[in-house]
Image (cartoon, rainbow, N blue to C red; front, side):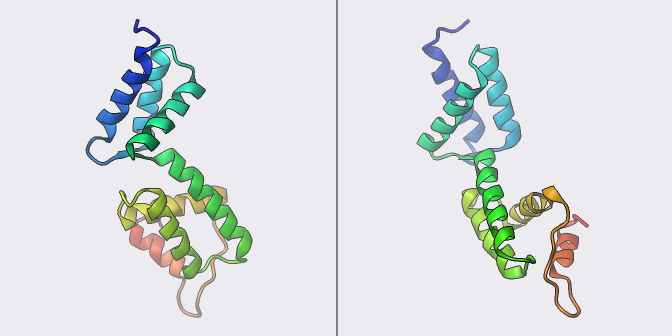
Length: 144
């Protein structure tokens, strides 16, 4: 087994290997890194803290951190507006793109955002007379 001093360096190496090409750690890569840390004898909270610290230091985006930011923003917007309109969705999309470090394209960000919005059931959507923009967008994304 590695010496205690070698564990942070090993975790930093694992993080760098996974974020090398896109500077982004998705949920699957995060799970792999945390499993390696646990196998090395690091407790989960310490491993997660190391993961966050290395990502911040190296300028990597961590999907789970972005999801936390987005969940808070979705909650804030849903409390502010009675029905979700295109303007509010566009605001959420801009936040999503920023939180994801602009490393995911607009389509991927929209899909992620729709999943977050619908975690607690279908949202109340402000529609026009002849058009439901939200349903049309979901069809376009292949989610409906």
